Length: 309
Image (cartoon, rainbow, N blue to C red; front, side, top):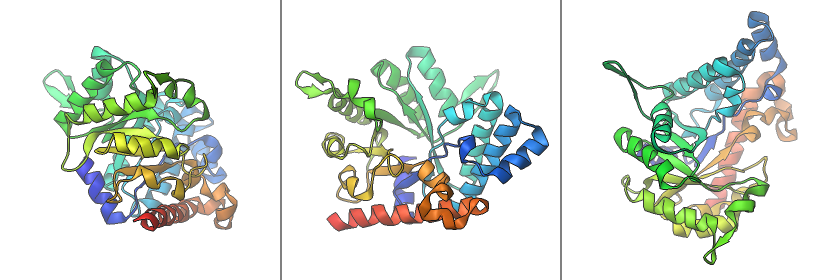
């Protein structure tokens, strides 16, 4: 899958993914009314509204981008109905030939970690048959428990030719409480980056490893350091747009070939119609606003990368 991701980025000239992180407050009133009219103001109704919202956005942007990143918590809050919508979204994105990064941030050890990996990236055996559960192409993973938590994911990734993105330096303001702590003369995130590079050596694609890293756009200088530490790891970059990251901040996340990173934007795209720059589209045309926001993001990042080549 890492080669497919690289190829699709080359084809689209868009090293970005759309974060499908729906909140009910983002969903236009007409979609909510339609869903509630059919299912009532219930978990089923909320999940249906999310599905219709996701589908419209996917239909509007799928030809522009290589990948999407649904955040599972936004679906889990609606219980089993929400998880069904998560799976429905993953399947629909695959129908549109989009790669899916499951933002699940799992992290445990032993059989528990193996079960997470099987559920999201691999297969589960039921009697004489095998099934895929959620079937994402990549998953985000928390490394806090060390190699014991990561190896079961890598084992499944090798079997399925899929990948992971390990949390290294996250975009949130308080990430430094732990990630920036100095240990043996270096911040913790550098030690984690070195482990990502080491883990990645065991599962390489043609050019890049199947073991990638999450590094926030809000910390560009740290991104520069981590790019050197992990030259063969793809970097998933959250924090663009709504959290303050701009194209000019991201150039050091990429390698000299213009590859090696994929930048995520969530509410900056899926709720674009609420922003002043796209208010002209109106609530009814929220998906068109999302497409315009994607086009602007592509131009911003591509322009920044080209300016330093």
